[in-house]
Image (cartoon, rainbow, N blue to C red; front, side):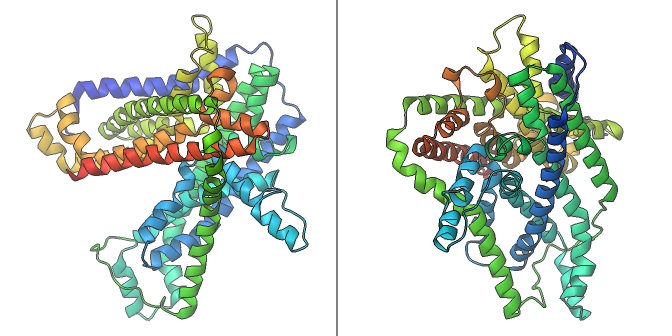
Amino acid sequence: MARRAGTLTRIAGGAAAALVAALTLGTLAAVALRADRAPVLGPADWAAIRFTLLQATLSALISVALAIPVARALARRSFPGRSLLVTLLGAPFILPVIVAALGLLAVFGRNGILSQALVWAGFAPVHIYGLHGVVLAHVFFNMPLATRLILQGWLAIPAERFRLAASLGLGPRQVARMLEWPMLRAVVPGAALVIFLICTTSFAVALVLGGGPKGTTVELAIYQAFRFEFDLGKAALLSLIQFAICAVAALAVWGVSLPAGLGGGLDRVVARWGISGAGMRALDALVIVLAALFLLTPLLLIALRGLPGLAALPPSVLAATGRSLAVALGATALTLAMALPLAVLADRAAGWRSGGVEALAALSIAVSPLVIGTGLFILIHPVADPVALALPITALVNALMALPFVYRALAPALAETEASYGRLADSLALTGGARLRHLLLPRLARPLGFSAGLAAALSMGDLGVIALFADPRQVTLPMQMYALMSGYRMQEAAAAALVLLACSLALFWLFDRGGRIRAAT
């Protein structure tokens, strides 16, 4: 194997791997060791486990089931504004959870437009809180993610296969069975797993829309064990149970998913036959319009309800915005500093070592960020005031939570770069910093920009660790917005939501745009 990036890369990659292991498994051990007594799970804890499994399963299944016809319609149709629509449909995934909750309440809440329409028609208003509210919010967040993943699978089917199917006289049902079903069998389990893991570790959605003890997830139960009972043993045990749920789900999906086996093509655009009927065009158009209304209406209502209150925002919101921006930028830098060395290390490694690096990079998606934050609190407390370090700790935990998504964006692009240009770089003796500067960073500009934007947007809207340890006078914007909602200051909360939405989208756009511009030069 080529020398790749040399000793400096091995050191950086090893340090990043050690840091990730310490922040996940190490903090969990710190919490468990500080427990004063053996943990005992009560009926409420078991109810939280059952609710977590139920809502995560329903959310994953419904998100994927709705995403399949949307992705199919987008793959089969070309129309003006299609690329813009695909981009906008991805906005909910980077949308701050607390903002999305406010938007969903504006549509489906007791005073939302749907409830008002039902009351006008003589029906009872919608009750959004509880299981159906949590599932609705998770579908809102994750259906766009599933759509993008499945759409990529559809576009990866060689166009020549559709030409061959047409030449053989295969109808739509035969095409679906011979071409589309194998792709779905390969793509859908992985998409469902990602959504299941995201929903399993959900905190803010259950906090806002759970509606009480019956709507408590394991992550929310961990928060309650910390915040109200300070039962570290129970929190550690719940975190282990949550980790076990995620691990079992990953193994189950790995056992049922199959490679697509669609073969290669010539990357030519070939017209599709058998989809030009008026009924099929109308059905695809209806699916796309309904998906756009479901995903974009809450965003529009956030903007309409937030604009009138911008001029009356209290100074605390502006100060919280500055703190959130600082945390987001810090988390972005930390995420890239961990993800890039890990991606290089995985490319250098072989066999199980490469798989181990990838598993370590994905580990944080199954570990409770509240446990990580509390573990850091326990470790820092003897030498410093953790409350004073709440914002840096939040940035560090946010960086770790974004790591799986950033790593998956960088690793394939880096592997392709090394496969294409690695031998040439070796012949020029490019190693270490020189290889990083002259080969990797220029070729990875586009995925780096996207990854940085994703990490910044996710961190900007996070409502997690900061809810445990922040001084009320030093909160971030999501926490300030939640305080306004709890105080029924909905006009100010809507304006704060608009600010948070604008900052999140602006950060994502700036980083993503910068990466694309750098890649084009």
